[in-house]
Image (cartoon, rainbow, N blue to C red; front, side, top):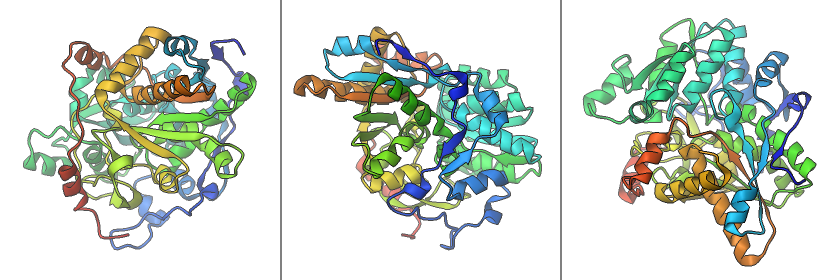
Length: 451
């Protein structure tokens, strides 16, 4: 198909989400309490909407998407699958490069796929206020968009380093009626305890999660929402991969390589999980790559262990690749990739070698972002640039071997609010950073003694 853009009609938005749990090669280890006992629905009820708890543990392969959610999805879905002809030409590669453009959503990323769903289920159960954390502001923006559409209040705890680096994300959230706080704050016990130890703490997603969870459980009319990591979040994002499968069929393509950047894992899961099923069942022989920063190398250097999802251990223990709940990564510009743990579902697939992980330094990532902007014209988020870097590397391998592979990556968000990071790169002020092994060892040493 000689076209830069492959579109689907409005009536081709998926009407069901795909749940990978029943198709995993190894059963997913259950979430645990600190004493090692499995977590039950009653333990999660003070924090999450009940329907989301059901989805978290559902053994059903397909879960129907309510019509009310689909009606909001129609604002931006289906999203286009674009062919990167100009990048291909610049690389002189025989590879065919496609990218699923999730930047066309109102907040500019893939995040509203789950934000709308979580806000909807909370609303129909009577919740009036949601609390959440956000790293770079993508998730906070998406949830602010969703709560504004559905008439809910929202309080967002934004990691301090991103709060300072990305002020326009804060303004966007406030435009959609959200309250935004720089985390760690003095509003919560968790925040105050961190600030007592380190008044200049840059914050982390683990700390912001602690604050948002504490806020939710302290108010009867509030529930907590999470933008990545958990099973129900991965579930909602599969609209990405389900649409991509239809679009590749229209183009007469079968993917040889599938790529997504990974912080918690949601955009990677959204693109890859519908294809993972085919790979597990032997119908697809694709290299599926999860890409992360060397400054926060969860999948590439963390152990596969039970750990808390937050800094002060308010959340259940999840089996995942982790750098330790005490891990506070440096203030890199890819704020959405600064999480200490990985999705249990993504971690399980990495552990079983169904997918593989790769890490890059931020300077080579920005080099890839500039190449993409100067060929395709698209200015991407720093997080998305990790996927672009991997796609370029795979295409250059094809230049060397002559293989005509089909490479597909998730263009998870635009970079219009990240131009400060581009300024740092273009001015030569951006530094390479690889998290020291001894610091990782120190953080891992504090992991719970549960295998």
